[in-house]
Amino acid sequence: MRTPSLYSQDDPLATVLRPSSTETDAQRRVRLATEAEARRVSEQIDEELRQERERMKRNKGDVKLLLLGQAESGKSTLQKQFQLMYKPSSIDQERVSWKTVIYFNVVHSLKHILSTLEAWDDTLDDELLEDSSSVAPNRLRINNNAQQPSPSVSLMSTSTTLSGLSASPASTVNSTRQTNASREQIGNLRRRLTSLIATDAPLADRLSGGLSFSGSGKGGVYVRSGWQARTIENALGRLRSNYEVDYKKRGETYFDPGQDVLVQDVGRMLSNAKDDIKELWGHPTVEGLIARRKLKLDEWSEFFLRHISRVAAPDYIPTTDDILHARIQTMGVAEHIFDVNIHGKSVSWHLFDVGGARGQRHSWVPYFDDANAIIFVAPVSAFDQYLEEDPRTNRIDDSLQLFTQICSNSLLKSVHLVLFLNKTDLLKAKLDAGQKVRK
Image (cartoon, rainbow, N blue to C red; front, side):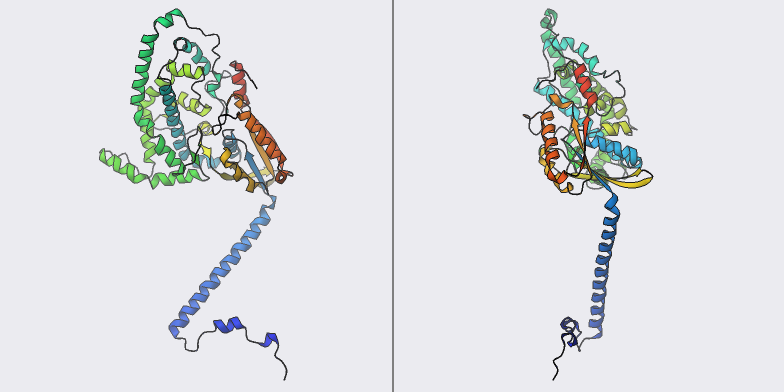
């Protein structure tokens, strides 16, 4: 007798799946419904795989650009410039979320100033108190452009060398009276600004979504990609109820379900305290500490404090220049997509803005494989600054070491590399102010 072929046998899987001869109508309906759902899921997976293959085929011509560099080198500001050039509408969509960042920058700067003053016992050496009035005007004039500094210019950088200052007998005689009056004035300002300074933590939590990260640096808070949308969602969700209850307790009807009540509250405090902020910012002790470089502020701090009247206005809306100056630190890698017209053809550029702190640089590596180009941002003005996470390491030395590592990485041997020397205007301002470059 002929041995049956393998293909003449019944499919064993079909035998297992064959319905029972005793299957009821109800069981049959359940079985058919289950099989239909399984087919739908299988077809959906097949469709997603097909779309993924098509997307990969289309994206073969896309440009993947990495922005690399240490923290506070200006990568995010450069990304905003790309955004303004190739996707300006997105800036308008995010404008309301930047208001939270700017308010946080102002409050955090005030907190830093008051903390530094407290560390110096709210006073300064007599000779500097006497001569700070001659130092302060230089702080407000950079390249004769006090009203419209560029985002990379630090007004702090005009700190004047104090080698020519010397104590006078008159200032020595009046030092006790002057010191007491200065302490009392700063103490009163600190008390009046206490409630405003207390909003530093809620604003940071609003921006980060509760994310904490050690060594967050001068910006004070880290954010992940998509923070703009989450800021608005948090405002209308998680924190709204607490502030609504608070306003009801005070008998106020300030709460608007369509707006961020925390930001409204901070804006109202800023409006009420703007004269105190101006007084603190123009105080001889603050000016003297900045001149002696005991109080170090970044360009974004001084920009917003100098424009506090406009920022504290009840109807304040961040301008594009405000957004470019606003400072917030990136956590991880944020992708931004722009359509760039090259020789009449639209090409999608994928711009990856990365966190530059030492603890985050490991997150760069997965993006090296298919990168087309790298813009390495190096702040040449940082010759007199040190890493926030390692005060022993000069920032210029760190940038040079990091750039060397990037150049020697085998994964990037076919990648176009652009070295972007940033903050040259700040370097010029420092040199013009008499600061010396020393090894």
